[in-house]
Image (cartoon, rainbow, N blue to C red):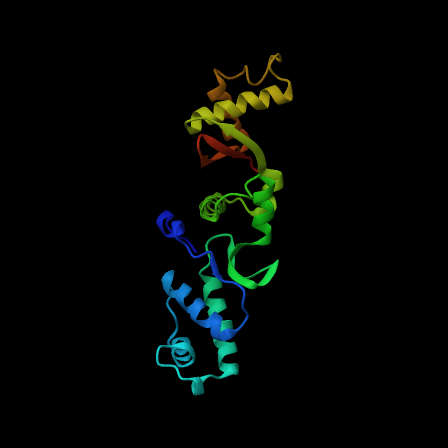
Length: 211
């Protein structure tokens, strides 16, 4: 699910913690669904109103109905999870429910040393990478490191020079001297080898190539 930067800035990442009681989870999950603008099916809404609505009575409680409503709410929220995320219990704490990065994307972000970033930033980056055809299971092969620059062209030139240094080509009578300048060297990498950049802010860029 795609969300705007504004929506992600106040996104309810944690829905509930410290309880597995459905009488606690249902109103919290219901509130989260309304907060992110979910369309709740009429049948589910009717069950929620009966079980935990403003006019709900203690005699209206039905454990089996509550379990079904809780399952359906979790499925609804999971379908509305941001790109690269799922809704459910935390792997390390079964009583903490919220939106978590999928295992594949969590490992990919760690590989790029981005595991400690704000989840909102993860979502926007994941959506951008997926739109570029980069999947989490390909990150270890396609991710080439980082570059610096105030623009994409400057960052590309920075990476081309760093790569030439790394490959020991600075004294060779070949690439990058077959190009006019480092920007041209980057363009050759981009066009011939499928290199591209993804901006992560602050003049930092992630570098990827086709695999």
